[in-house]
Image (cartoon, rainbow, N blue to C red):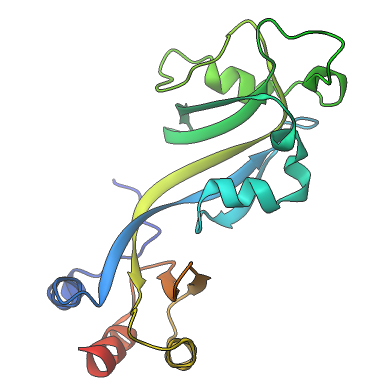
Length: 200
C-alpha cells in the first residue's frame, strides 16, 4: 500500500487547479521539509518547510554558525529514510593549514552527516571522503510540488486580506517584489472556490 501524500491531494480538484494554473493564478514549486542534523547528538530536528531556500535559512539560523566560517561545503543527494534527500554540511579542505581557524578546532564531528555523504548512492557531491563533516548539517527531505498563489498586480494589503479568508495550512512568503501564499497541502475546496471567485 502506497504511503499517503502529505499534500493531501483531492482528485476532484484537479480540473479547477489546472485551470487556475493555466490562468497564471497558481503555480507549483518543489518544496521539501527542512531538518538540522545535530553534530553533538546525531538527532534530526525538523525546522518546517524549506520555503525561501536553504541558503537564506543557513544565513539566518544562529545554530548553523559553522557555515559562516571559511570552510568547504559538501552538498549532495543522499539516501535517507527510504527516499532521497538533499544534504549540506561543512568540512575541512584537504590541504588546510593547521594554524588557520579550522572547523575541527571549534565544532564536533557530525557522524550522521558524514555517513550519509559516504553512501554509495550519493550523487552530485564533491568532497574528500577521508575528512569528516563538522558542525550541524542541513537535510532537506520529502521534496514535493506545492501550490503557490502569487499576483504581481495585487497590493500587499490585498494579498494579506485574501490570506485571512483561507483555511488550508499555508505560509506567507515575502519575495523580493511581492508576497506569495505557499500552501502546505493542496488547497481545500473552499479555498479553491475563493481563489477562483476572487482572482479568475
